[in-house]
Image (cartoon, rainbow, N blue to C red; front, side, top):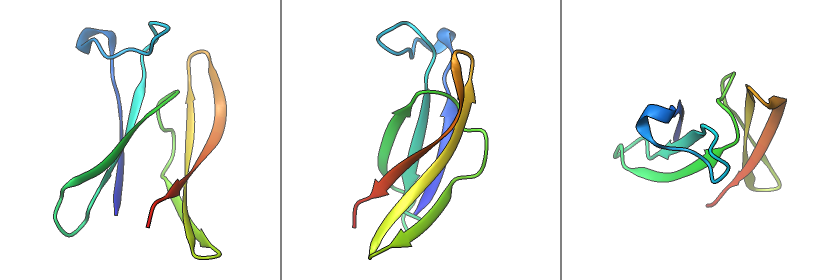
Length: 80
């Protein structure tokens, strides 16, 4: 799987329910290029995503930071 993030601005009219700009995290199938998932994340990604497996479960960790959002790591589980 390939993971990509993007930052949306007010001029594209993509905002959270609170009226703030948001960012998206996309997952693509490497073999087909087909989008398999997308998530709204609270702030832009600030580093490379990290992926690891524990007890046969895959995790994706993303570093984020932005205005009104302190730097933090967000972890997601990846469905099999």
